[in-house]
Image 1 (cartoon, rainbow, N blue to C red):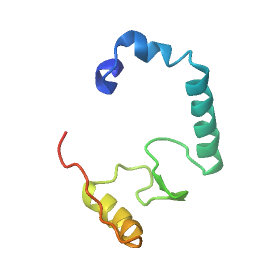
Image 2 (image 1 turned 135 degrees about the vertical axis):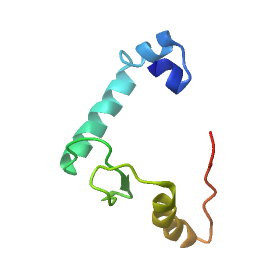
Image 3 (image 1 turned 180 degrees about the horizontal axis):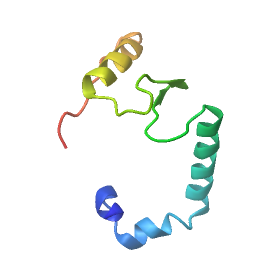
Length: 84
């Protein structure tokens, strides 16, 4: 099921668990989350700051309101995918 979700074969998905780079990235990300007080999922950070919602999923309009000012500050706009 996970391999189908990420678009790889099962063997490619499983090999990621034995890959040292993936293992180290997961460990570093986990430890970083611990330093930020993450105690569950989902928690979202933008530029190192915890986003509102207290572990609840963030909807599209909220993401747009968070990211648009950051991108607009640099004279750009956000173009997000609205369908998969």
